Image (cartoon, rainbow, N blue to C red; front, side, top):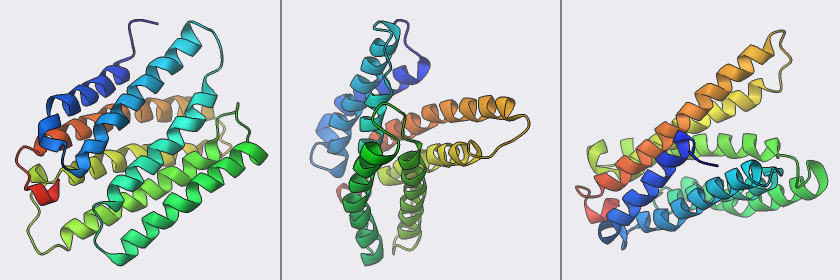
Length: 216
């Protein structure tokens, strides 16, 4: 089981950062990051234990955790949005997406097969919600300083990660002559983007030191 993969250490680092800066973020929307990041670390370690030590399939665990990740980030964005359209769209997602995930698990792809359908829909919606964050920041009355906008860094990390995730999943459905090489390339890119995502989350938490309270 040990040593752990580098991406898990990045996730642990993000969680520890939320602990270190808890006094700064505990009364802001960023406070939800601490339990969420703890959840991510537990899932990753548990998933590795199931696969490495028990030699059992662990995809069922990610069929639970991945949709919860999409729902968490959507909820986080909902606390930031000010435009009625953005608020309505993310609330619709928070209601419809979990229902669709349950239908897909029960009737379509099953609980013990990794559900790629919700991965495509979830990553696409994350891209859309990140773009809405950028639009609201750019259209705001004040000039945006990214170093004092924690939500900007979270949206940047999520956008880059889900761009890779969405591209990989779309191309994985296309029959190509030399897809074996292409699949390895996309997986490598996607795994590296995990580092980008959690680095951006760490920066977001640290940037709360300089952010006005109403922006955290």
